[in-house]
Image (tube, rainbow, N blue to C red; front, top):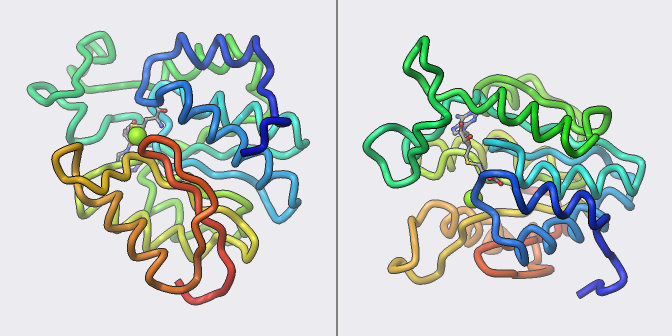
Amino acid sequence: MDASIVMDPRLLAVAQRTKGFMPDDEGLALHRAGRRAAGTGLGPLLEVGTYCGKSSVYLGAAAREEDSVLFTVDHHRGSEENQAGWEHHDTSLVDPETGRMDTLPTFRRTMVDSGLEDVVVAVLGDSATVAKYWTTPLSLLFIDGGHGSEPAWADYRAWVPLVAIGGRLAIHDVFPDPADGGRPPFELYSRALESGSFLEEEACGSLRVLIRTAEGE
Ligand code: SAH
Ligand code: MG
């Protein structure tokens, strides 16, 4: 889909060398969705779950190319699955002074490397708390924050109503087969489709991109 949308190779190289959880093909699909969304002029792009800024480079490139911006929301303390003892823990992302995860310095370096500092706006805090005070409609919402049931549904309830009609809802780590990964992202995706307010536009790996066709979710 959209073979005509090509990502700046220099930004692609930065995205590829940035730590994170976004395979190349899914990142490129996200970039294309970001381009289509930002091109509508319906509003900015917003990502929940920045981590070290890997997906932010894909979406930030799209925002740059369409003269839009990306807001990226994270408390930078890591999800449950990033904490010590869990599968996705990375000791190099622990602040030695506090002993807590801190991905903010790495994210900042990614933004300097990519030259996207003027296009990608970091929002530091709890996602649902930010959403509570957020009113600007979004041309694209990308949900990739906490993957447990509670944080994932909190993001859905808080942010999905802000997707404009004609805007995109992208969800990462959607695994129809439970053997491949956790359930909550798949449940969010299923709920969005069953609500009748969204239609599927694209699927790539565990990335799903939906378009809002009606209010109501
Ligand atoms: N999109 C990233 C991966 C995100 S990992 C990539 O491309 O690599 C999930 C991120 O969600 C973590 O950085 C974690 O700190 C953040 N997160 C989890 N729960 C959150 C919450 N309630 N509020 C804000 N950020 C949260
Ligand atoms: Mg993910």
